[in-house]
Length: 186
Image 1 (spheres, rainbow, N blue to C red):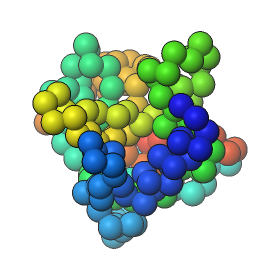
Image 2: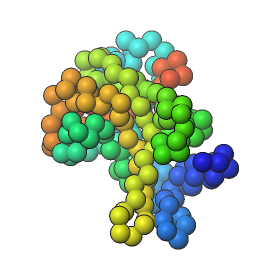
Image 3: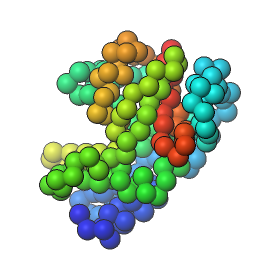
């Protein structure tokens, strides 16, 4: 994928546009940012204290987990753009890396997606990959893009005994410049 095309894709994604057969169309994304008045949970305050240097906390996503979110064969958490509470948590460089296409036969597979840390309510940490997936509908040729967390997601599911129907909240923050997520459940 050429650099100019990739930059255009990122610009469109940040503008809330998705690719369709006829070009780009406006994505069904919550207005930017859709703030939710909510106090920071005490467990998250403690997690951030434990991770010296943690800052820039943002609630980005809340919903119940679907069967595919916890299915071992899927091994990823889907984060649809239209379910985002806010989408201003990535740096410009992270946005470019997150959108890098897996199917471009790039031999440098380690640079596909953004390495991140996910921490739970007990301060247990997992290394995951955060990226944008392009999903195309089989018959129409139209598609949409969504965020995912993968490469280790099954360990998160097992370590937190996650099940279909569990309520989850996903927070983003920075620790010494690194992208981190906090997963709240219950």
